[in-house]
View (tube, rainbow, N blue to C red):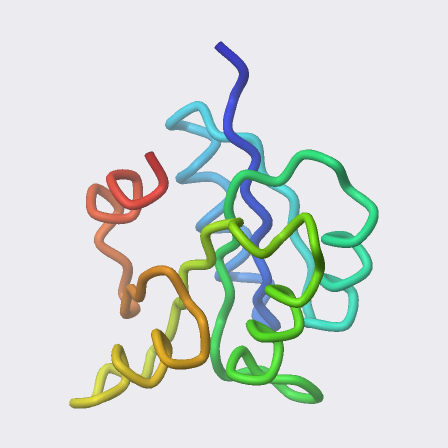
Length: 119
């Protein structure tokens, strides 16, 4: 069985490092980038990405703008996008889902829940 490939989009290298290490230890293959503009290029050119984890609060282009742009890429309209954010306020989950996210997880991340979502 092939490993699932996950693209991690986060402007904080510490978050990328932690998520990558955690997911690789659970047999996921990880790609990463530090902004949504680079992510759009990867998502347009890379054939196999099974899921996207996106930080919602990034400079230049935040997750709320990036998710609809990702979904507009033909091959990505059904790719699961998990919104990851430190914003854990009432209504944030619904706001992420309205933007097109498949699911939402707040920081600090519950790793077991994240793995369940990705599987």
